[in-house]
Structure formats: C-alpha cells, structure tokens
Image 1 (tube, one colour):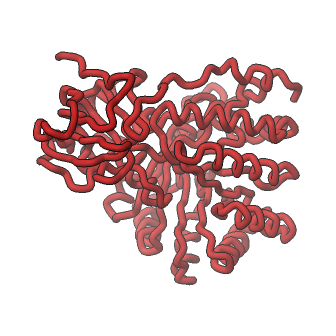
Image 2 (image 1 turned 30 degrees about the vertical axis):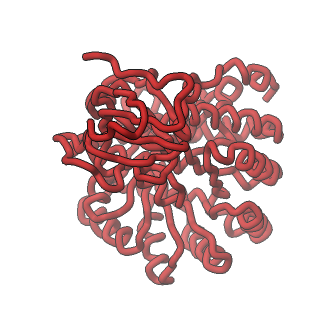
Length: 438
C-alpha cells in the first residue's frame, strides 16, 4: 500500500481530501454505500475552514487540489463528555497506594491543600492541550465543589473556557456527594456556582439512607432553576440502585431536563429480570448513559493478591437495543482514580470496544465518542456535514479493525482545515507542581 499523502504545511484555502473512509453514522448524508464495517468511501471538500461538500470517493475533481488519502479513516471532531480536569495529572505527588477506590479518595483528600488556583489552572491547561492534540473539540468536566476551594476551581474553569474558546468547547458540572446535598448551606453554594457559570448540576450517588432525599432535592433545584443533571451513578457498590431511583423520580415528576448518568456499573451484576426492568424505566425517562470503562476497570474489585472478577462496564448493548443514548468518555487521567490516560478518546473507544465487545457490529462504535456525546452536549461536533467546521482526525488505518490494532500515535489532526501539532505536552512541565509537599 502507498502511504497516504500528508496535508502540506501551508494548505490552500480550498482543497479535497480524496478517498477517505468514514463511519456511516457520523456522516449527515452518506454519499455511497457502507462496507462490512459500516464505513463509506468519500471525498471531503474543504473551503474556508469548513466542510464544503461530501461526495463519492473520486468524484470531486474541481473543488481544489486533491490530497489523496488512499482509503484511510477520517473521524470528525470528538467530544469527551465526562472528565475531571480539576484533579488530573497529580499522580506523581498523590499516587493511589493500593489502587482501590478508598485509596483514591484518601489520596485526593490529602492532596487538596495543594489545589491553589494556579495549580488547578496549569494542570487544567495541560489536560486541554493533551485532548486538543488527540482531536477532541468539546469536553465536559466535573468539578469537586464541596470544599473551601470550590469557588476557585470554578473561576479557573471560567478562565479556561474563555481562553480555549474556538479550540475546545468547555462545559462543567458541579459535583458533591449525595449526602452533602442535604446540607442547605453547601447545596445552595453549589447551585449558586452552577448558575453563575452556566454549568450543570451533579452529584456522586452511592448506597446511603439519604439517597432518595438527596435525589429529590437535586430534582427540585434542577426544576426551579432550569438546570440539566449529570450524575455519578452506582459506580462501586454491587447493591446500588440509584439508576432506577433516578428514572422513577424523573418519570413521576415528568422532568423535562436532560439527565446523564455516568458509570452505572452495578447494573451489570443484576439478574436479567431486574436489569430489564431498570433499563425499561431508564428508556422511558429518556436518560443518557456514559460508561467510563478504563477508570472503572482500574478501580473495581481490587483486592490484594486476588484477580478481579467484576469489570468496569455497564449494559451498553442492552441499552442501545432500547434506544437509550450511550457514550464513553475518559473520566480521570493520571490521578488516584486512574493512574494512566491522556484524554485520548480514540484510546477510550479502542479499549471500550475490547472490554465491552463493541466490535460486532463495529460501525456503531465511533458514535460513542463523537456524534452521541456531541448531541448530548449540544455542540457542533461529531458529524461530517457541509457547513460544519473542518475539524478532522485522519488515521493511517484503512478500517476500524486497523484502528483498534495500533495506538494511532501517527494520526493527523485538522482544525478548521489546518493541520495542528499532535504531540501532547511534556510531563516535565508539571514537575515543579509535583514537588510541592502534600
């Protein structure tokens, strides 16, 4: 095979990416039939930083100079709908000593005195540069909003949202434990921060006598102020049942706002009848689901000297069969909740495919990191369509199988039709922050 041509360093205002392949589910109007993997062969005309035309491969011969891609894969701009940029990249100074969920909680609590606005700002920006290099155009981050430093984290978010405008669309979720929702002063402060910054209302749910009361208060505030809900749900307790509780409350209230439930791992351990009942209610309530497979794979069922049995995914196949919106995301990166990661959604998609058997059929998989989260976030990403920004990731892989087989470190990333630097920042940039005492 002849290696596909690289876009020249100084691209013209108009050109054609010739003979690319893209998933049919990520093309607004596929110009031809899909192959066995669900990929369509096409030409993409780029003009003025936007997609001008889509046509069958080889058809666009008068729309500018052609850059032949030899049938390799193209994906639109990607959307990472569940991250934690305020705590990212602290591993060197706050490692998780045993890899457990409890170890992660303790390490983060011990590190929080280091979370000055400067500290959060630099790590936040580092994370965004990682994501940008990997082709991500939209990110939603949860912000720890319980302690005295919460307002500072939101100020940093506001600064980053403005500084990165036009490169990465940023959204934020205020996150506190569900027990803390019952503290009026703390919850009022959270709602105030969310409203001030145009954020979403969130909480970390778990098995507690206060679960139902906390959920009702979250729905009360969301209805009163017109806020969307984005919740951590049933992540670490096998007996957790918050997902069905959330669905029941939403249905009883006829709640009209968006509800996104992250994790939902416990559902995979329910018997078939209980799981079916829960999924039926989730579908009726219109709840979206985001799975965080790499982080949960790292944390779940860790016991010294014992191989884990419980792995980190929810019932994605069964959800899709019911029409429930599903997506996957990065979650944590190089912090006590996940020691690895680089805000690379292609890695997340590849690992989710392997972990959850999302390769049969293969063609539906790319929507998990593109069209589905972009639609849920309400951002212009995740779809190839005329008039959309020419934000593209171009891979040497000619198929989804080849995409999954290698890390794809040699991808090309175009923003508004122009090639960007794809090398992520050097970890050494944060060395001085990691030297601070805990």
